[in-house]
Picture (cartoon, rainbow, N blue to C red):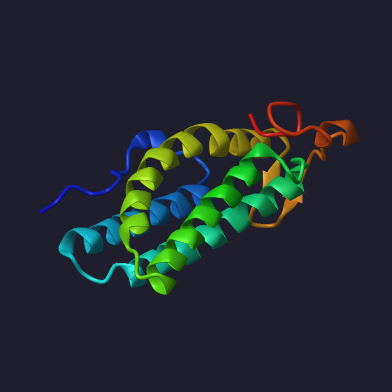
Length: 161
């Protein structure tokens, strides 16, 4: 049996149940994709499932960011866009050009990228949600951010740390 592409660790737990479940599903889908690659099977169905999940996952986080007052073009959302663009391009290479190598490369890149993203950017989002009293189940935010805070992008108030 081969090792998983990315092992779930306590460091990935952010103590936000909805996000933790979504992150666990991402890891599971990444591992299923990696297992398909290792088995020499058609990895496209597993990759498509991972991509669909990632699109929904990022859309959920970006909705939360908007409701909490993050600047719409913040670094967190920009990183999401870059990852999705690369994933979609790898899928295009595989389906239109018959080149599966980008999928193999992307497997390792996603496994390296995800823990740092979760531990820094997603943790900052969870912190902001807690500070502002945001309830993802209802979409209500107890403390709306000040207008000037929402005007900043990366690294500043209202942006992503």
